[in-house]
Amino acid sequence: MEAPAPQHSPPDSRDPDLSIVVPAYEEAQSLPELADGVRAACEEAGLSFRLWIVDDGSRDETWATVQGLCEKDARIAGLRFRRNYGKSAALAVGFDRAQGRYVATMDADLQDDPNEIPALLDVLREGGHDLVSGWKKDRKDPLSKTLPSRFFNWVTRLFSGLPLHDFNCGLKVYRREVVKSIDVYGELHRYIPLLAKWEGYDHVAEKEVRHHPRKYGTTKFGVERFVQGFLDLITVVFLTRYAVRPMHFFGSMGTGAFALGFLVSLWLSFDKLVLGHPIGDRPLLLFGVLLILFGSQMFTTGLLGEMIIRPRMEDPSTYEVAEAVGPADTAPEVLDG
Image (cartoon, rainbow, N blue to C red; front, side):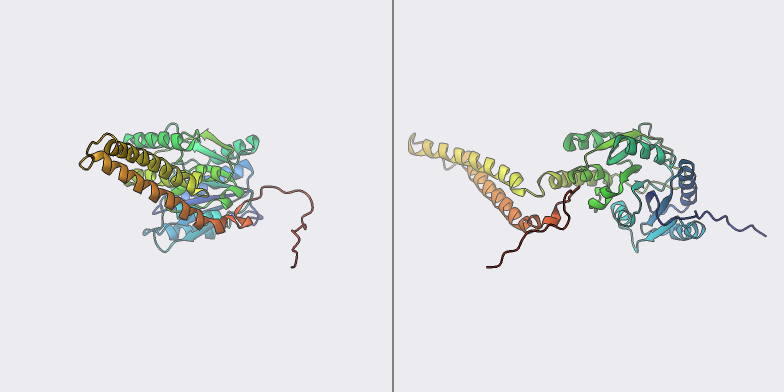
């Protein structure tokens, strides 16, 4: 007769120090080892934890495995999507349910080492950081993944201004207020440090972490992720710099194009009226007209953008207040008449 499975429930798991969010897509073989690794690392560091495993619409035995882990340990919780939404969606629902002062994320494929979580957390606490991102300096992946990733990270550093070597590392730790303040959707999980910086959490650090070869299965990401990553980078850069001031983006382009087109047209008018040269068959005439039309359209787009976001920006709840001092019950006086 087989012995019953050991129970790992702690004395009190309702108020953990740390929530760990793990998106999982068809990783049934990896999850038991992952749970054991997380449990051992946190218990050795004296951390109470809650492990959130988000099944992103897997078609294998992932959800059954998650259910079994939850039955054995009350510190493990599972969520299952009806279909595959992607890593960003899994992180978003995990962040929404995260408890405790700190939140960690890691991948489910055992390439991230759970023993790195306490060390990342120490860097976060001691340095007063908002977020600490892992850096897979010695990455155990083929060149077909590492070389494009290095180029992708270089471009991201160039556009974002954040000096991180590995934006896409799944192993990160955060203060809980950081993950509660950011919106992760689409494929924006690659740019969480940039999204956090946009919200004012700009104390971002990086630490080298161990990386292991994939033990089970195959990667779920293809070459299309690099194209998607570049498009998402453009999205994030625009959102972080111009989401609340679209006129600065579209208006600058529109003003420049309109001014250049106006100068071209002014010169052609002088050439026709004063110098007497024909201009009807000159490509420069069409170029000047196109610049004026393009400039007008960009300026109008910026103006419409300002009109769209104005109601949202007039709402004080749009702005996150970090701290407040003084009487808490003071409110603006409303005058009648």
